[in-house]
Length: 145
Image (cartoon, rainbow, N blue to C red; front, top):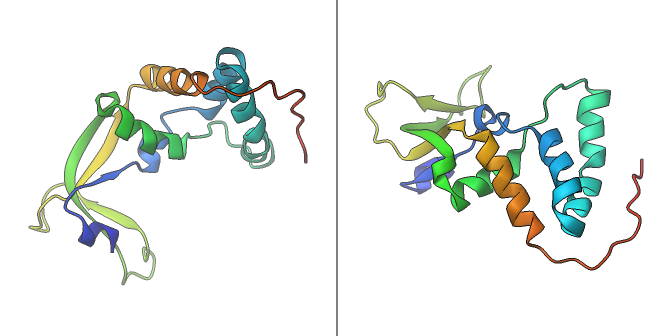
């Protein structure tokens, strides 16, 4: 429905969001972004612990922030305009987002798919923006299981 309803959608898929490492961002937020950074570090601790230690993921993507970064600074990304749709009939692929990379469907491109991220600049922008948020001293922030 979303892809049919709009003529210009930006897609930040896992191929893009996993180019940014949440662990790197969290460490920088803790040391460079003041109280707001400390809060972001603390509230993401359980998520990172669960994915990293319990599920064994070596890399933890930065999903929602990647979509926000695409709005704040589109120059951080290389992208491709294609037609994107959601498969609704397949037994194995129902609900999967699919893109017509070669233009074989003869439908107009309505989506900008993020392909590559300038990770260094993206991490810098996240830290810069969060460090501008002003929070009062938060005291001890503890990890709760």
